[in-house]
Length: 146
Image (cartoon, rainbow, N blue to C red):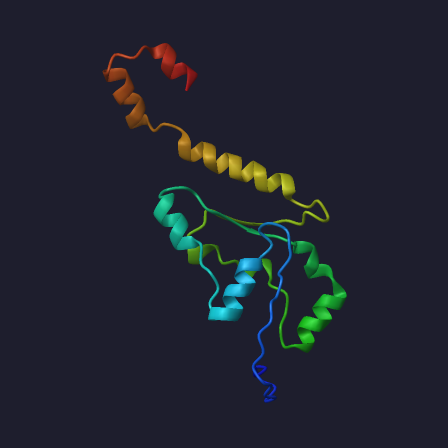
């Protein structure tokens, strides 16, 4: 096995690696990037199976932006924490870009409030649907309950 960038060659050995983590923490993404060199993109799948559903892009762990040790390590590597202005919202045509920190309990409620709001705006019947309901003989009492 050759370590990337080190120039050190080792005899190829077989080994097993165990990746442990909570559900949805990025284990599959880590393995996909390592083995295939690509980050798995969920966006086309969502567009295919959920057309017309609003997408909210949520940046988690926003508290790390204030971590001085992490920021120092990033700067030493020629990197920097992502800023709120650098949102990827436009790239995936998301309705909103929001950030939160579950650890610090920042904006957690806002995320769910906005998700609920977007879902309700999407599922409300339009005026055309209401017109069709009335023309099919449905009573106006039904419309008042919508």
